[in-house]
Length: 416
Ligand code: HEC
Ligand code: HEC
Image (cartoon, protein in one colour):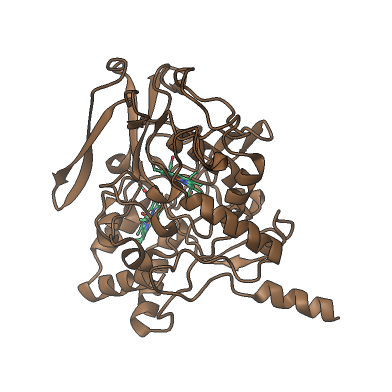
């Protein structure tokens, strides 16, 4: 009886942390075991670590490059939050388009690394400018100074900013069936909103898995997301990615440069960062905004409530109810936002429904309010105006709201 009661307490326990300050995104989830808490702390230090060139004085922290975009995870996910598009946090994915889909470029791979160790030339130089589109803006990439010459024409480029990284363990722990249940690829219910899952290659299990992370749900697990970030963004090999490009004479920081243990620690860190608690939940204007969020069918994609599986990998994450405002599915958001670069099964116009939790604290934590995959929206209002495709009806309904209704909806978003 006691254990049953305790079990219920654990289940009902809130996964959020009530801090509306600069560290709002950086708290471990409540109720972690001592062991998990310790793993979280070690992972935290490696997430913030500035990697150095090998050989370094601390062998577990060297191996930077030879090609890279930044020296630490936190450079692009500052304070576990979202990077600004006008910083290193914006990286450019790239692929060659062909009849059979898209492939990494034979010389430059699938991401442009803009930094390199001394004596080496970075892959290219990227300059980003903003093009005005009415009252909105969209990014324009200017890429030159290619290391080995300009690549062929049929190149698809996709600029993306580093997302906030809290709450992801909960998203990872949602059962596959729970996510698939909401997919409606043929739009059978005829509501104009379909939603598809992405299926991506998992290097550890060597099988296709449901994609959950990244702007196109292009990563299956936090372990692989972290390992691929270590390699692609910082130039650090790991058991998942033992090999890297570069001249053979460049010293390595071990093989692999990141041990299995440390990869696990960083993974645990990502799995156990708590989402921040909401504010002003009962304020009448916020309540009105919440009703409008439902009425405008924002919630058809930005699903308010999800539950983790009872058999989730980490005991602390089992059977949790939480409020991410995403369905983790891909939706066609129209031509305006399209990058025309297929990413596994995601098409050029498709993006994963961005979780909206923590949105209202972004300015406090990260000092900017830019949104969407490439940071083009300067605030939530602009982000909504960019919605097209399956979200056209919602976007048009938003435009028809009275000024007071709009304020209520935006205040609701600020309360998340
Ligand atoms: C150069 C900038 C940069 C660096 C450095 C970087 N990231 Fe990222 N991160 C990104 C971008 C951009 C995305 C979105 C990628 C995509 O959609 O393809 C991302 C996505 C993620 C996500 C998925 C977030 C979500 O909501 O789905 C996680 C987790 C993550 N990164 C962890 C890490 C870790 C761990 C490191 C360090 C090993 C790291 N990142 C280093 C830019 C960066
Ligand atoms: C058809 C599904 C769908 C509907 C309906 C929808 N959204 Fe979205 N929303 C998305 C997707 C997908 C993205 C990510 C797009 C991108 O980054 O290019 C997004 C992004 C956002 C963002 C930016 C989030 C971020 O992290 O950058 C906000 C804010 C937002 N939506 C609010 C709304 C509101 C408010 C409504 C209702 C008026 C709405 N959305 C309706 C799918 C939808």
